[in-house]
Amino acid sequence: FQNTFANINDTYYIEIEKNNLDLKTNFYTDKNFSNLKESMSVKMCSNPENLQFIRISNEDGKSSGNGGKLIGYIDDIEISYTLNEMTSSIFSTSFDECLDLSCNEQWKFRNTDKIFIDTKNDVLSFSSQVLGTNDYGHLKLDDELPDSWKMSFKFHINELEEHPRGKGI
Image (cartoon, rainbow, N blue to C red):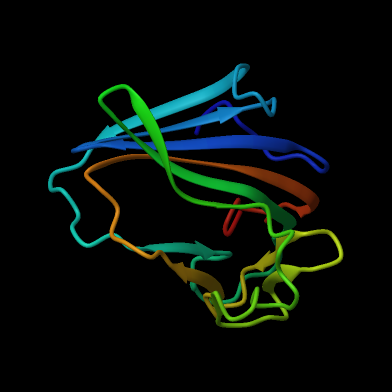
């Protein structure tokens, strides 16, 4: 994204839409998904099959760097699809029903020191640093996703330390 720069206390409302080979991501600045900040579209060369996981990675797994950190949270994840002009929900969570760091073992995390369910604030919290560890969390959906779907979520930045060369953020 060329026009979206991360700042402390920024909140973005992100929408990812897949329609067969077309993949579009929109960054909005309001919870109604009406004030579009930036959009990017790509046409995939092949259609992925058997998509059944939500995966959140909080860094790229590259070698340790000398700086760069992003701390924040994700909330209000929703996945839906539209068929014959009727929208149906596939998955939805605001993390309010979660009682522990893994949301009753629904989410699997590689390192709960860096990415976990924050039960005090009812969000999925992350602390992303270039450490070379590729920490992540994933959730298996009940069913595979159809060829066309839409995912939306809230993305908030609590702390930001830019890397001198932009690596890792």
